[in-house]
Length: 129
Image (cartoon, rainbow, N blue to C red; front, side, top):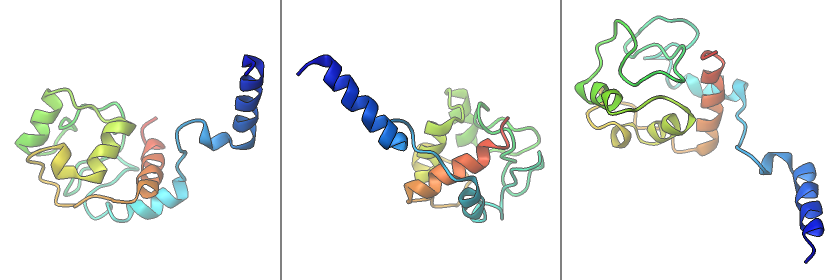
């Protein structure tokens, strides 16, 4: 097959299905609804710690380092080992917190729905600018 035909087919697919070519986009409004599961322990729109650390400015932060929060030894060790919160690491953590960070104090069992995680990440990203 001529490479120009392949390029034309690929360009058509991207035009017809723009979301299929890249990463899935999250819905901030849906993410706000998902965040209600987290809001008992966390806050995102201010830099205030609750039972859990503030998630304001989370992306790019080394795990276990938000000021004035008493992290578990496991979370501190994860940060010391290089865990920095980005979309990929947060996605893994949200699927199964205790598997991603051994010894975390977070009691939440995780989110199983990938779309909920994608929406929650979109919601949290607006507070990490």
